[in-house]
Length: 198
Image (cartoon, rainbow, N blue to C red; front, side):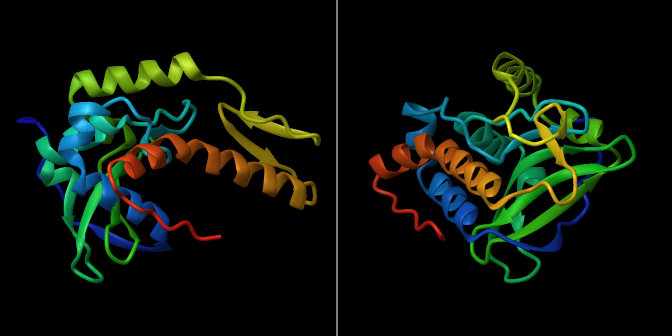
């Protein structure tokens, strides 16, 4: 990216996800095998997120290519513990955006700011950007239907206060767990063991 400005440093946020950190670390260890044999496995909770657009997750091949080809934007060291981190999400709003990363050690979420969400998405090589967005458009469909009155914009549901039930939460959690299964199966086949928090 010759026209991209130099990246700012990573800023640590107060959010931890050890499970996602384990998955990204396993992907990093198995990069060659994933790129060679499993480049089209969807990586949940990764990709492009812009307000008003469908979430577009990266494939394993796209994410590993970003780590390899744009390390100045998609890799680094955790500002908390110093362990390696990997970027997995780009996007934002009109006035702010960036690359979101996860520390492979402590599981911290880190953010590298850009001028806007569009400038963050523009960091992506054209082929990865276009393929990721096209995959999201092909699979765009309403998320699980909830029984109560809610406002849905794209795949984001805004639940009115008092209408979110424990049943809704368990269905959402089950759907989220199912989304990880293909990637976890591939990593298991490659000899990786991922511990899920319950």
